[in-house]
Length: 313
Image (cartoon, rainbow, N blue to C red; front, side, top):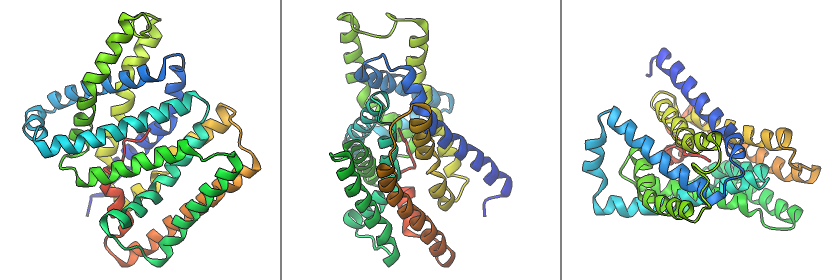
């Protein structure tokens, strides 16, 4: 049993992580004038540098170097780096293009997609009632496709990239801190090359705009890594069943920001599609809680644990 005081600290860290992920659209909106590829490159570069500092400060850099450069490790994290790059690029573009609501849908769908991928990839078995929320998510997406007049590709790209990322992370031999360091490290050189070329062409945003923009770009590393470190701390202290419920804090806040702060359209027809997905999530959570009372570990917990939690947006 985890001591109560340790669990309490873990819950504080978990809530802080999810709230920070939830309000992250505000940060990217502040940088809306920066081209999205430059913003992504800065996020990668500053995140990697900060993660290296964390490894040095915690005296884990030597251990990281000892385990990170095996051929199988590099091969696995090349794939996960590409996936997280796609996820981050799509999310930042969606936020600054005015699609925060649709982006939030991707992270509402994501846990259900994780469950489905567990069945398809790892031959895991679902309990009968678990198929209902998966089906409801599919119905909700189909309805929204008709309502939008197009496939909700932003939500599906975010959910699928993060879902497959979770599968890769389940097979990866490194923990979340080492893993994100490896992923940003593999993307670091291309990011730096891109930023240098942008600067030489006169199109670079860093050191050529204003001090506020420079500080925000450098702070992208903090905005990325601090929630991850908080979540990693929480994951060691809080039951995965609780984290599974709390993960909806982030997309809920994103959704509210999109509708209330940035005045994105949310019609009654969209509410029906989102409502179908939300109803499925309620069933998913309730069924999981009931199942955990009769079994020590459920499939949902295994899937949530397999993703290493985040990084979200």
